[in-house]
Length: 259
Image (tube, rainbow, N blue to C red; front, side):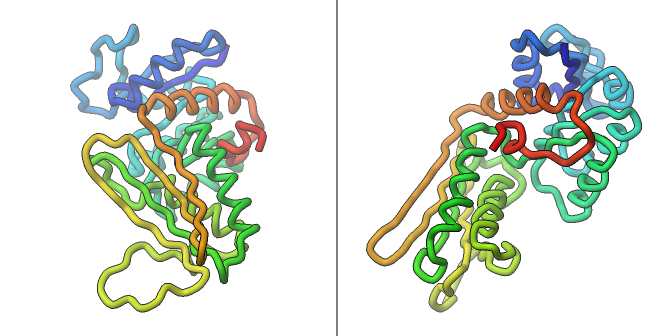
């Protein structure tokens, strides 16, 4: 049995993670915590008492899952290293210093980080890299569109950026050098090799992503549309079960799926 702890257990994703963990016969729910001061602390939630001590949760878990907030990740990484507890990170909107902390922590503990835990999105990302490698950058333009609910705080989404990174890898270029995050006004003709991003927000959209390869006379579009956040919880628990007992390193969903 793999003991799984849930950070931010009272939120929408946290509750789904609890449900997915309880549904897996090879998993045991070690517990769940919320940030200090949260009114849920001490109350019963899906059969557990919500705690407020993340340190204690890391101490009793084989793997902890974190879908909380970028500002909290540094502290969670420190706790993972302190207790030697594997950590699954689904938090998006991470800045460069935090990504550096992730890489550093991966030298001493097993960490699985993905902008999107969906199996379908992981396969889509692999396909985008392959297509980008095969389609001439002088002929095919790449545009990435994404839409999410009105409450999402980061843009473009972490998944859209991961798709852009995949396309850039396929073309053997740095995304920073070719990304175009927005267009407005008299921007001129689109330069060859650019990877464009379009961001939409509205309603309760869970997550739609489309990558467009457009050339004169033809266009290839591949999309993934999420209708339930449950797919992210399902992928995260699958990743946690895979990560338990792994040697230190920074892993991704491609590793989990053996791609």
